[in-house]
Length: 250
Image (tube, rainbow, N blue to C red; front, top):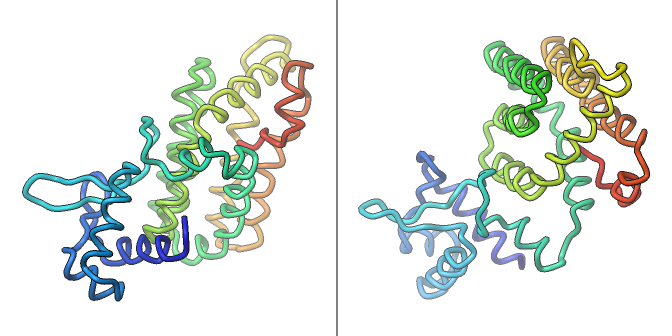
């Protein structure tokens, strides 16, 4: 995306009103005012976003900027970038890791006890899914946990970006969860452990948030990604190709 498109998208997010499946954006006239573009140029930009699947018309309401989701669709910008060869899976995974570690200070400033409780419930959902070898259910809870971290910031742009990254990485993360959980079971003599280390590390994040210490949250986030790498790198020959590419981030 060029700089003008990114600025235009930013204006849509700033001026949009949250609705069930995204942001209801203002009229073309209002967008022309806030963006400094002509109405013809605004219309052209909106058409482009609609072609990408990022914008949809809702009968009787107007245009809605669609929030990225996990259920597929070609409208996800990171998915489109992957298909076009503009970025690699490893680059998106690396950006996601860096972004999550970077938001730690802001989370400490804004998180509520209720939000921490909801995060803990999501970790228990991961634990239950993993114990049943429900890899899809575990990943769904894992995704919800990480998106909830961004929602603490109360910044729709950050949530939009985080959701898009998780969408683009969905298939990789599902496979990595399957591999990591299988390795933990093997390391436990073939028995399902009481709690998987790949799940329990998320409790370290919630404990750090309760401490309200920035350094503790940043350290817990870093350890989360480091632990996944340590488990993943105890790889079978079949898994090593993926690990060498740097695609072992959760």
